[in-house]
Length: 371
View 1 (cartoon, rainbow, N blue to C red):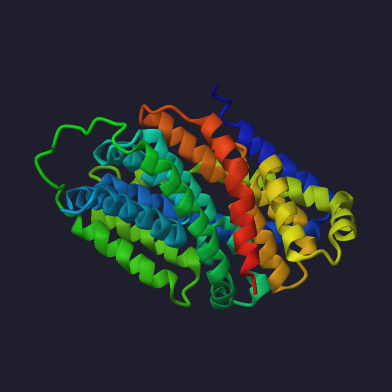
View 2: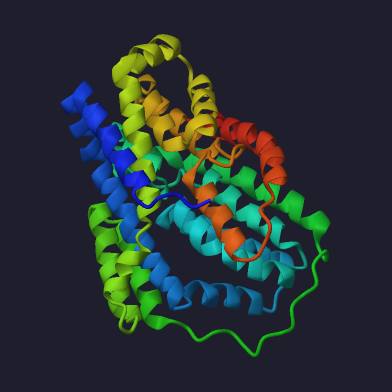
């Protein structure tokens, strides 16, 4: 069902107007925190979509499928691609770009498309703790750690633990269904390497590990990719690659969280989670994210994160936990849209049932190794 194109802009503007009426300082603070975060999301989406137009990701999967190795090695290679994409380019990027590739690669691995597609959404959510840029919630929280480097050092072990749960789940589901799909007819060869797009993406990867502000890196990546890909007659059309609806929805939800805090939410959260341990805070984050989406869940529960340890516990909950409901994270909604566009069914029943096991397992594993 399509909505009026002005619905989200008007709703977001109304929410920020209401927040401003309650507290101008809170509204300005929310805008100041959101602007670089949403700017990063916009820039990276443009860069990655243009890279996909140059068939960069198709080339990567083509190389994987052409390797003279066992299919399980190819499957593991695809898992690694998903994990690296999530870590460096965000979980939303993984959902947008790698879901169609999973649908194309699955028959070559002898498994149903929905099985490999589930792996993509599991890795996107459970693997989004590694770097500040892996998830928009991480970018909102990074100031609690002092720097991006400090965040990464603390998050490494919990991130690896959550990703290991996703790997185990993927293997457990994939292996029993091996040979359940008919391999497609062989193609004439691996697609030509998109050298320009590959160089820009490699440079972006390096820049994201440098002290350059993440939003500036994303903006430069979008501009450089437009030059490298050279969409003929479509230079300005790169603006159409910006996920305006997703960004407006994120702004609306975050403004709603700000309104909740101004209307007594801060006191409520502090009273109920004061002195709570990491597992309690992580569980509260996971439950709230599944109910209301992970971005507003983080902002609403942020008063409970009084130090880096509890802040990371909250991130574990809102990142690895929302794999039960379709609206738990924006990446899941993007994943479902890409599945439909690829002609595959969206396995909501399998997603929910598996999520009921994955969410507690992923959150518990990550909290268990939290320093």
